[in-house]
Image 1: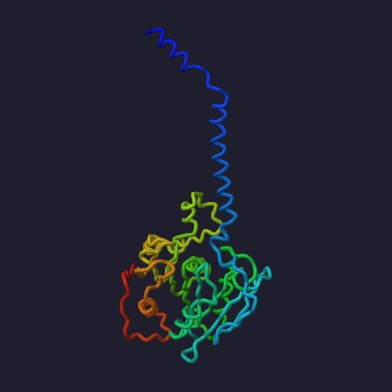
Image 2: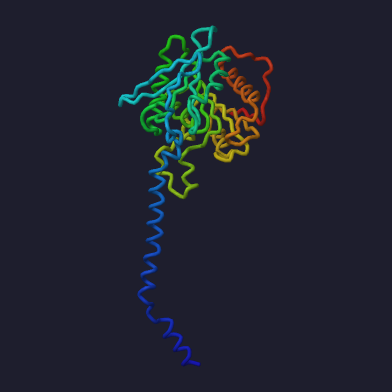
Length: 309
């Protein structure tokens, strides 16, 4: 019995083969290299992921803006030209309030005519800046470049004598909400409307298993709302499959003066009811002292409105 135990002891303490030690070193190194490679791929491809519209080819035939819209080219200090559309309602009181609208990351200003005309009907002038690299705009998109372009657009707008610079609203949809919030950091609006907007682009890094500091376009809307002391209307779909509803609820909690409206919809089918959607906007603008000639009759409530602090 004692001899067998001795044999076992000798077997247990026998040196392991060299290949075993090599494997213990090589496998973790391969995993580490694979992870670094994955982070590198995401780092260099994230611009295409955040701004997919810039990857689409430009239309071959130049198209004019819709009837009643003026095409404005804003030129960056580095020479890039950014297309912008502007329109004002016919008649009404001058100077007028205005809306700067930022679209989603897979859209173009060409797709925003309906939204723009809704604001025109309400007595607001409308400015639609395009993103860098989208449509006929020059350059490559980035958070810094697009924010600078929107600041340039804001300054162009408020320099017009027919615009009331104390009544400028920013409205952003999806990534456009992050753009609108980034603009608000540089040029505070009278009111802000965020539609299906994320807390930050950086917050999605964990979804891909990478650290947030590798995000080149973080768009920290959460930080902006902590500091911004203006009325904020936040829309979100209760079953948004792209930007979960938890993002909208978190932004509601962060904003100092939030009105939160949650509707029964996802991301790409939001809003489920245009009537309810615009009714909420009308109510919000009136409460914020931003009337541009809105008809107050028939104001109602959409699904799940919460008026915050």
